[in-house]
Image 1 (tube, rainbow, N blue to C red):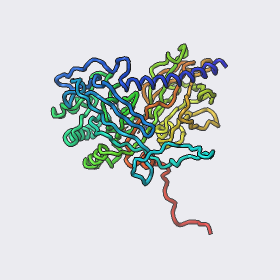
Image 2: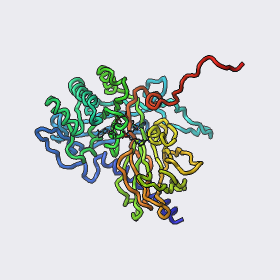
Image 3: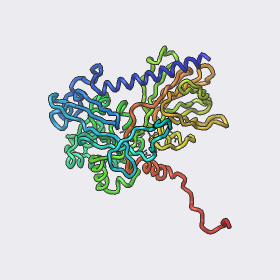
Image 4: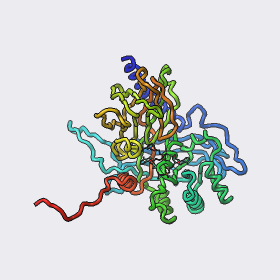
Length: 453
Ligand SMILES: NC(=O)c1ccc[n+]([C@@H]2O[C@H](COP(=O)([O-])OP(=O)(O)OC[C@H]3O[C@@H](n4cnc5c(N)ncnc54)[C@H](O)[C@@H]3O)[C@@H](O)[C@H]2O)c1
Ligand SMILES: Nc1ncnc2c1ncn2[C@@H]1O[C@H](COP(=O)(O)OP(=O)(O)OP(=O)(O)O)[C@@H](O)[C@H]1O
């Protein structure tokens, strides 16, 4: 009973702490933080074009009741190549507006009433065909390109794309330090490409980058999302496995052109905010740094041969005790990844919810669950009856050891990952399960044979 009471208290504290963290990020984004945004200017070394965290003087976030707006007021650098060298010219980061789009309608009509109580009758608004659309209000200026390492074809495509975006679209290009070195090894032409020197600068990327392009597979999108611990700019994933993008360079140019012009159909992919709370912590504020995942957080037995023994709570309610190889708490985007392999349902990424999927439970009746988006989940390694410790891993990375009594608290993060669609959310989801997973592929039954009279 003591464990239960303690866990319930911590679940409530966990939610408060996540909300506090969201508020902190809002402050950071609006430039009212304790000065972290206003760090010292990063020097512009001769051979390296670097980002500075000083460029973000002030940002305004404009979230009207109808739709979601983004306006960031930034201070520009003196050249196109370096952020934050001169602090006296004000530039707007490309702003955009999100609105619900209805099938057959091109207008910007927005509708937010999901439930209506007119004349005492409860009705729900028709919302099955909603597609979120992103419309640029000012032109994007800065693109971050992230690439899968060790791939010759990605490297070639990246060099070609950087050149085209710079020469034809006059955009500022930011890449990872590794990629800048690769580009400069190919040619000194690429010296205009920007990067960062210090990992702390990555924390401010969301204020400088209008668009992220990923060249790779799902793992590269996960990598891109993991770089943004708060708000995420729209991501345009170029999937290596998708011949549509790669058959010739004309096609990717056309696609990028349409993205830069807008409007773009996007999928808002929810993420999970996870915190590890050690048994000895006196309160939630002693939690370790939170981690945000796009696919899932997994608590498993690692190399131990013993069953994990995990006590699970959803808000104030006891859910169950997992005795098996472990548990996956997945987003709907992650539902087609590890959770699927463990028997979870595939869920459209726009469905708000958290998947609760056991890994090899030693029970005949443990079916996976899908819980609503607003809950806080708490998974504790049972303090007294566990034969071993457990391991938490985040999007398949960053494993953390959980001792008996340690807990993982997880809820939906306030910063989704907006990804550009090829067609629209639903077509893209269906195509990914057909092409990527060969869902329900079966030899067509032959025509000749027995029939109903
Ligand atoms: N048994 C399993 O299926 C299993 C085991 C471990 C990890 N994973 C998944 O791998 C992910 C990490 O990906 P990685 O690329 O860094 O590792 P990786 O290189 O080992 O690739 C894992 C595979 O999962 C696919 N994948 C990742 N996210 C997906 C998604 N949302 N929908 C459909 N397929 C997806 C990738 O395309 C890749 O083919 C983890 O988040 C986890 O979901 C799956
Ligand atoms: N920019 C990056 N820096 C470091 N690691 C990266 C980067 N981009 C991707 N990775 C890692 O490389 C691995 C493979 O990436 P990715 O999944 O994109 O390629 P893939 O496995 O060939 O694609 P697919 O999804 O088609 O199977 C992933 O584990 C990912 O975390």
